[in-house]
Length: 97
Image (cartoon, rainbow, N blue to C red; front, top):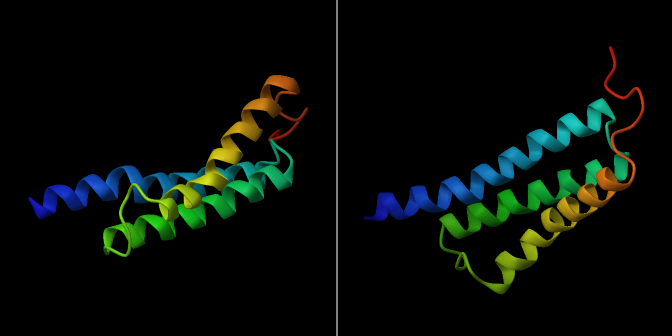
């Protein structure tokens, strides 16, 4: 039962943070979006990974004020990226080799 609970916490939480960091790195290096938007995701990914690790080790519960605050930078990135892409799209010529 403990292994099931641990994997349930690991998958949605820690892997989300790792995925966030990988996507942010790609967005930052390819310059498909402005750098501040990519940096916001890099910061959010780091915070969400740290929060997921804290939840895994029982520092606080998954559904808590601290967990919600840790998710705010990722939420802000997602909203900012959606608005940016709907308004302007990707940068012209960005990512071209």
